[in-house]
Image 1: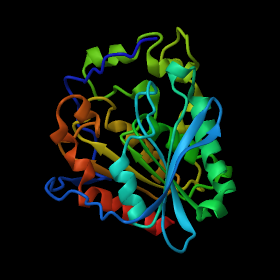
Image 2: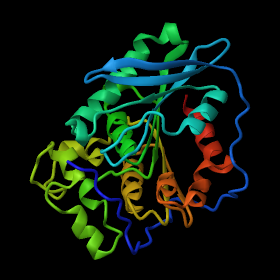
Image 3: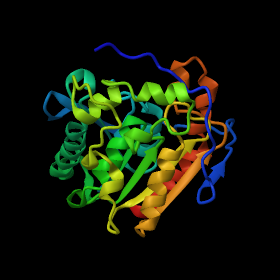
Image 4: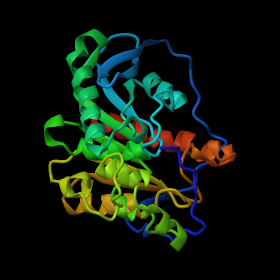
Length: 302
């Protein structure tokens, strides 16, 4: 399977923001690293097939609350080196931060593998909590795009005992990923064997995202005991419909779960803007305001 071309939607219908907070952050106020000493563990094996994580731990007396970070990549890529500046910043603010690999479609993976691998990473880190200076009772998940889906679905596993989840522009209901977009984009998502369909049904499938797999949909796993969620989307996201996080937000709140949703006005799909040759469009995501809200959320719940 070759990597598909990144195709952005040509139109985006606005989603309801009446229960969300709309932000337009000052892009001149970017997070700044302080070069705080951190203990770094690199390429720690934690699961088959050959998956590893990297870990930043603040120096000094612990134990530290843990944030497990899952990058995006359309379920085609999962490079654990992504988000380096963000992960450094979180660690400088008092969190142990692990960035994990997970199996993609190109590696024969499906959603069940990804959920199991997030779980395996959390369990491995907890088993080594004394070694790393981690508090095993204070664990949060953070994911972006494809990683946002995985941390959402894994975070709703009741026995994993996750305290908080940060989901940025993640797919939630695969069949609705293009709901806000133009007709051509909607048709493209529904092609048999699309990467999203392969992640849903397994590599080599001829099914589509519209062939439902109830277990895969996080909306079917929400209970009143779910962890607190902080959800993010750009109003100009042309890759994942902004209404995806809105669906999750509404369902969490309906179940009595603590959920906060932020919409960044005029902003697209995170750091993907850099790959598309528009690095300035990614700047809102790394501002003091946006990252600061997530740091405050994690401190409150961890």
